[in-house]
Length: 400
Image 1 (cartoon, one colour):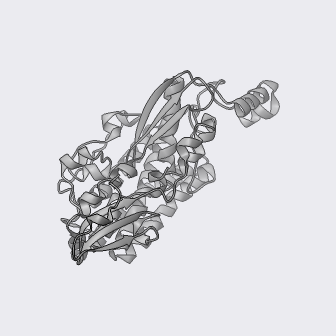
Image 2: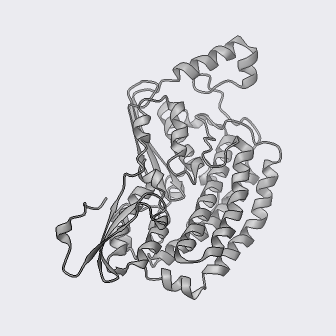
Image 3: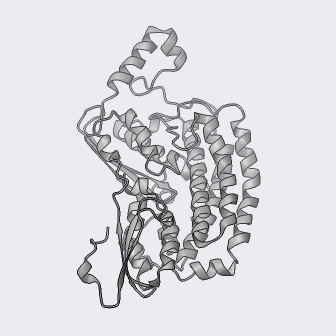
């Protein structure tokens, strides 16, 4: 992150403005110290750490299966993506990646892409609200509720879902769930058209976003930007394409790109990504085979409730896995997914115990936030709000 603020850097006729950490448009407890010359920003220094949760440290004292719910609380707007990255890393560490059933892989993709759309809807509604477009916030949350209804029907939770498991998924899709998804796929393209009709040609929106917060492709790569922030600068990098996981190599989708690298470009990319997620959902739903939704791996996977309640073997297995967990062989792994905000990666080091020796999360919001000083330099102070919104940061992920 940027160097700490130095009062001696203040030049004549400049003033210091604290933006945050309680400002609503910082999307969490982010503090930005601005050096202002009139209304122009000469320097912007972001301060983080107000929401520190210690997720990585907690992973060192929790068994592998116990760490999963903590991942929900990082990017809490797209919990299934966090779950997916974590369980894939643990499966790679255990050497059981190939044992996950195909049906579970497709179910994971369905949940991850629904989470992507839900996250982009929150981003679009709040970003537009920051700039002054109130109506879109209500439109976007209308569709997000449909996705939350699907999450709730599947796992009982709407936000922090904890819906994936090492070895597969916790349950089969409940009756009526597929029809809910079909209904959503039927109405969502038209709803995205509504969003674009409200914003894309709106002269006020254009003036507030075009040419604002520009990042060149070279700077984007140098700063480690990923997701829509790097693709908005024309860099074609998407983990689903670069290092395919689950069943993304079987699905057809485009990686949306824009070339200007400004707030408007990042808006275009995320809206186009929602359309591509609908394509992925349609294909995954059509291709998903019948079969088991969790691997038959007694050393790592809990028995079914019926087995645990009716057989001594199932009861013993449930007891051992719950109390003692499972041990991973010594080694280290890194596994990444394409989250809504960019490359979300988990680096886990094992010393042979039932919990991680060390875990580090490559949080895309943290790296994307590093571009804030560059984007805000020599811009009017009101553009800081537009720039922060275009980064789509979640402070639970930055301060993990």
